[in-house]
Length: 100
Image (cartoon, rainbow, N blue to C red; front, side, top):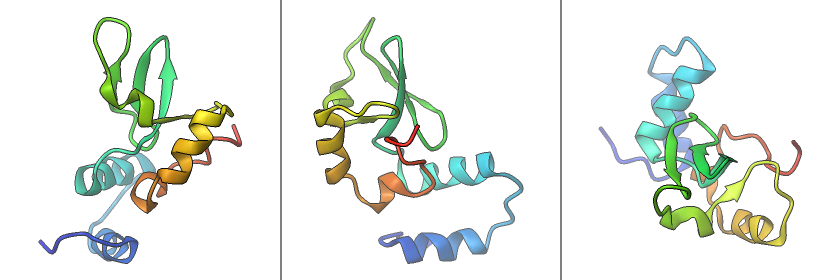
């Protein structure tokens, strides 16, 4: 399979695969390009904002990526700064984290 470097490459791959739901599409996208840095956070647990997979927790262990994430629903300066650093790979098929 050709390496996915651009959004156009990803969309071309997705067109070739029969996809039956948004959930299936989002799981596939994360497996092809990685999980999003835009994440849900509840009680210290971080979940991918695209597919919902558990990314880490800051309660019983250390989640080193926590400082780089954008927490959906936060409107703090740190999340806004982190959002500016996100690429198309983080933003595709993830709702705007500030409009929740």
